[in-house]
Image (cartoon, rainbow, N blue to C red; front, side):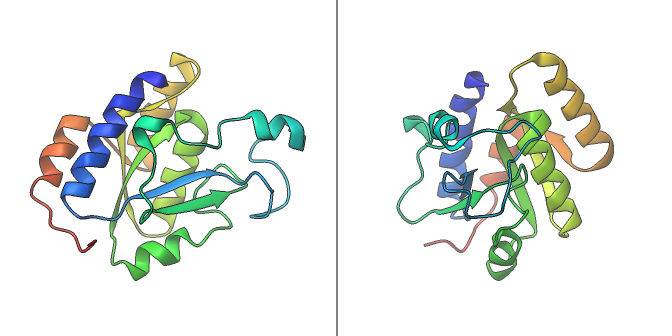
Length: 165
């Protein structure tokens, strides 16, 4: 999954250059977004605080970028993400991050269910094991999203002019 970071960084720059919204998602360390855990494995608050809820330095959000705090796998579940994207006039979401078989997949499925076109960037997602990673990408492409190469997304973004100031 760490191999995805440089690609996420490139995509961030391309999105910012195109002036399109960049929205991050991360776990809600206070469990305020909803009750329960994002997965079936229970995590107590002490362990939870040790998990990755901060963004690595190379892909940190800017002060003007929105962060969705979530308690479930999908960035849409129990959050204002769909309403935010609709208010911004967004029709397509570019999905990056970890884990491909968990949060990425759940977010892509929910993006489609909310009427957005989900693009999962193959080189900008990762998982703890290649098996579930590849299986999730196969399933996403077959049913719920377009799994696309990073180069094609960066090329496409160079033709897009967004509204973010």
